[in-house]
Length: 123
Image 1 (cartoon, helix red, strand yellow):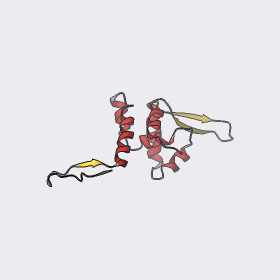
Image 2 (image 1 turned 90 degrees about the horizontal axis):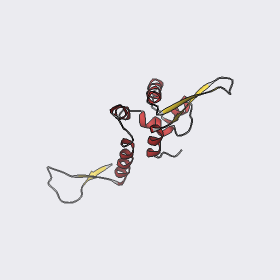
Image 3 (image 1 turned 135 degrees about the vertical axis):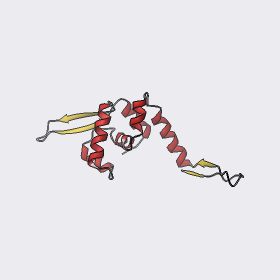
């Protein structure tokens, strides 16, 4: 994401610049951080799984679908993230009772949907 500046410079004070990939990541990060309006929201954005969970929640998904999209997340971490996002009103939990066994789905809403769009993940 960064590279040494190929121009002339002092060897003890090297300069670095963003690569094209780094520039794209910085643009996405800037869009995400501008959605936060308070210290609580900034604190939530800094948590490890906030943005990845929201990136996958553009449409309603079951817990297992989100977990499979984030293969290294533990059940506990995902459950905790979903609870925090729901408390912040960034994700909505709906219970579907049409099936024999009722099940919840999760979808980004409000600021959570703005973060989802900023990430721009297409599935």
